[in-house]
Length: 126
Image 1 (tube, helix red, strand yellow):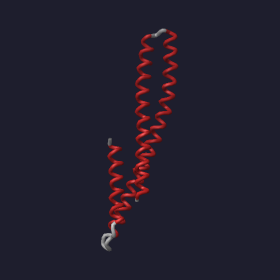
Image 2 (image 1 turned 45 degrees about the vertical axis):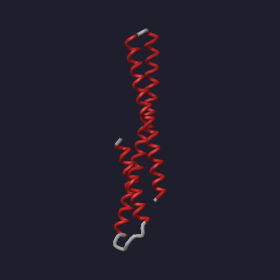
Image 3 (image 1 turned 30 degrees about the vertical axis):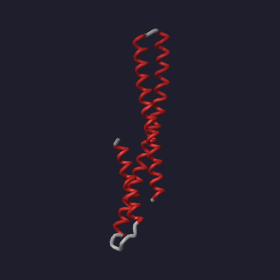
């Protein structure tokens, strides 16, 4: 939620600075408008950098989770071969938790891509 709010605030800053920069600047306001435009661009740049880092981290988590899921499924097969009901239950629960975590990571990657696309469009608008 915080990430979403920061993206929205950055987009509003870009739109606001585009409105200020698009207006005919008065001589005394030109310096202020340039500074606000610079600040808005810096905010957008830092926001896009943060989104890229989040995306990389989420993708890395997905790869690690896939390896962990493969290991858990192998453990489950071993437990089933030994007919160890306790381990079977534990491994199935762990697999279920991990699959839910992977779904959440995929959603995060998808959200990060959408936010990066929105910021890219905002950059082009300015």
